[in-house]
Length: 269
Ligand code: ADP
Ligand code: MG
Image (cartoon, rainbow, N blue to C red; front, side, top):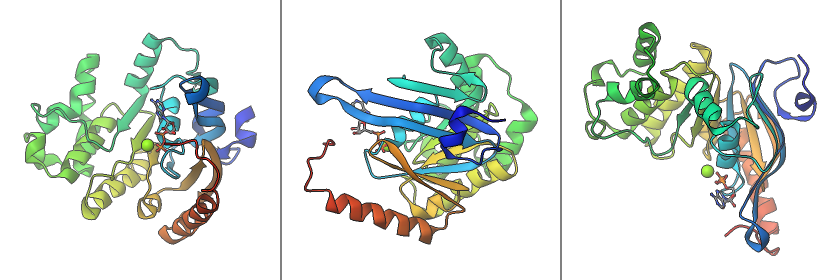
């Protein structure tokens, strides 16, 4: 399958199956003097069944890119597709349904409801949607995450790593086409973080999921198949088969560019 965006986009090989893509995706916040161009005509394609990491300096547009690809935020210009569905142009109701049925989210703060048990938190999005969980799938997810003996606990009775694994199970519960994780290990100690990364890797390798993860940690990015580097709202590089060392080396070059550019006025606060 050949798509116009796939020819020029950073991301996957031309013949790869594409889970999501964006063409000339532009996002501006505010207007006039205070306008911020968070994304500047980004072309990108996310390979299906792959683990893609997104890296870049703070304020480079990583979260905005994720939110626009996930239909959580509107775009200023350009087009976005989830699979074959163009999501730019969907109304709020259609977007809500698409997010609910086809996308899973993990955030840095786990966003678990404190009064619900782990099990109830995991199935909450399905319950809200009035959908019956696929028991076999759910058990596989819970088993792979090692949460079987924690299901009755409330979030406060779980470690940070366990809470994030619950959030991970919640994101996977509906067996979404695409999982977005925004710095999912940002609040975790390195041991718990490693658990979550291993699980995301397993979700891709064993459960055929597609994962897009924002991280600033080269060690975390090394678990991915491909790292996309953002700078000032543009994708400036892509690195397949990353290792912590090669990612770190690449990031140092950003630092050099950033340092040499500090004399210029910054558009960020
Ligand atoms: P990152 O996740 O890489 O740190 P973001 O995508 O959060 O970057 O932000 C990109 C740019 O857009 C930043 O300059 C940020 O200040 C700005 N921005 C993000 N969200 C908003 C918002 N809701 N309103 C105004 N500016 C925003
Ligand atoms: Mg962010």
